[in-house]
Length: 454
Ligand code: CS2
Image (tube, rainbow, N blue to C red; front, top):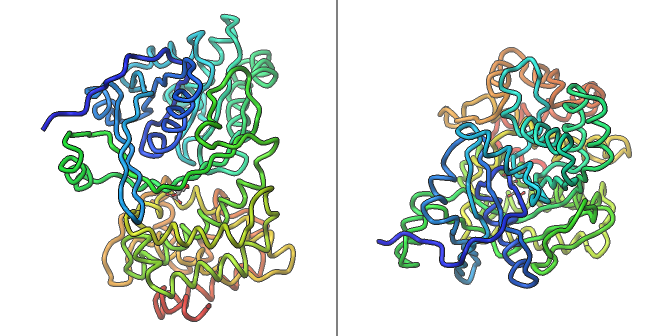
């Protein structure tokens, strides 16, 4: 079968993107294609892989072209996206990456590097220039020395205040290098926050084979995603930007309320379904919510514990938002594995679950449901499922999490300050709720523990 190849001429580059995985291909790139289709502009994307050569091996032979497949309950729709102009692999060619970041035509750097990608590297670590923050700050230093125009760095990861978090990480490193430079970064580089949303499961080999038969060509870089997408962006750019509103992006003064709604309602229940669903034997989100107990868990968490913690963002109706979310989870065409969402829980729990718990405790509201999610995570990271089989726990802290499973795992895990703030970990109501939930899961199983709750 023939391989997909690019049909349109190259576009002049304007964006460098770090982390060209499935979410980028299902989200930032299609929005950019919409912007260019509607309003033109030199917004070709230079994609940079920070670790593996996979994206380059997939996209390179296709000239950067790939297919974005919308998977709806009523069928599929394929669209070829051709905004990626080049794919670089940072460990292989750090010089080319720096050149792209420093190039005068680069106006925006977009990031999908996952929660753990924002770590501030240690200068005593030889590897620091190869981390995401190291690459960015090195390039900003070069732009500063050369008097190049300021750029915008747009984080598209699921972190609260992702712009401020990126700025803080870059400034922390820049200050260690040169105070004057750090001040230039603070004064000139813009770091807008944004809320991103589109459910995008990892593409499997079986997906590639099935779509090849349907499309009539082979596409190694293809991505599958749900029809829904939402991008709310703080209107804070250092220079020109693509007309992403052509694809429906909203530009607003402040995205905090949107971010909290999405992280707590969607990602919070996603993590709940990931840990408790995996333990209950559910492979995918759609399988879990087909079980009334797990759908009931989502409704319980939203109605009793999450919505009361939120200020509704302008233009959003929270009960309608969560009702639509359940519909999105039920989409049978999307097989989003609980195991995939369970990854990196130590990096995800604080903004998805623990902040809501802290707010509820402060306001005297209930926390039993969210405490059950924390207990589900604790049970999961022990690395053994309810049938006694090993769980492949993927987490930067996996070894420490596993090691905590001797004696009193709940008490041990609560001492990990990178996950649990001491004030929360020390709250007797929280400790008791998590300990009770953990015992119920261990004794009766995750599903029975949910039935008990709802
Ligand atoms: C998921 C998210 O993998 C995960 O942790 O919760 O990737 C989720 O699918 C997206 O945030 C949806 O926008």
